[in-house]
Image (cartoon, rainbow, N blue to C red; front, side, top):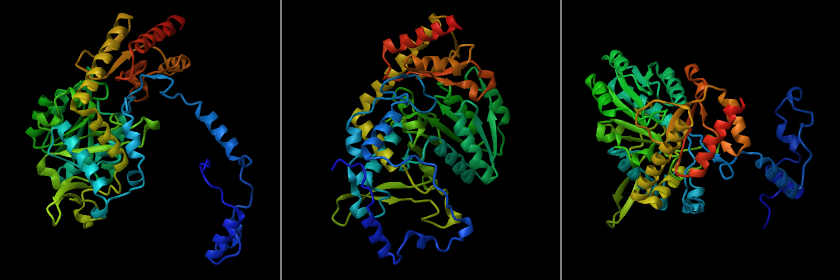
Length: 450
């Protein structure tokens, strides 16, 4: 069978119409008044054979700047990482690929165990006690953490660092508006959350303090100092973290974080135009019963054999609405499985080595830009992203780089006018020394020509 899809024949059409008791397609729309029916031809191309259609679609897809042909230095929350080949083999299996929610544990043990392993590995990485069975993405996980904090503390004020991803902050504000919560942004200073302003804003109405580690600029925030400020007023300490960075950085759990969230995209999930991805949500044991979404727990059956079941389902579809902590309806089980397979394939030493390569290559690139005469902002410890000021149109620079087979970094001027002409550059373990050197050289040539 070479067909990617099977077209419907006229005989198929007649059989379906007969099965539902009508003779023509028009009869299906009898209830719609004639005056509002669409009676024109659609402005579509003429139908083509499958072979012609396939060629056209391949030609269109070839126009994309794929990371398979281009060296990508674009990060800002979505990264080009190594994905073990076993990931696609496992997630393409029909028992995983077609599954939605494992409501019947007796026939879903494989799916449930995979999710359980995901939860376990997230706990190990973050240093937390409990993790749920994934969420939509890192942004919604962060917003859900704020909602849990407000519900737990009964306080209506949220302090969030402006060094948190701008898209995550927008998601947070959208959630907060519906719950009548006040969101106060704490400015950054030299690439890190301004601790003086944070202390000034702390009061008895603050339910949570939220920051990112490493933050949006790639800088490593001083969690120990921020935890003291947050807990002094009995607010919850929420940390959004790149899970790969935790292969080399001390986990937020060691610094007293109450909730740790993030996106598992760095593990086994392609960039795929920015989504879908897989958010994670981990907490201390005291908040276990307030985690949004679902948890998979380990148990034993009547014969004493190990088994897995959905438990602590605190969403509206499972418990009384007034007791629910979230209305999140689905999880990202397939992407969580991809992350689990990737982490398992890499192992603890592999995750650590992968994180180390991100750091060493990013530091090499930073030094190369400095030696080329460019101004690298911020002098703090960083993971795999850093900010360079090029004092030019980043949009034009990236367009020039694209012609040379390079996907440039993120234009920070899109979010902050004070960062016009600045680029956030991500360097992952995928990038080679030659690619980094070419990137620096192409930027230097662009400046000479402009």
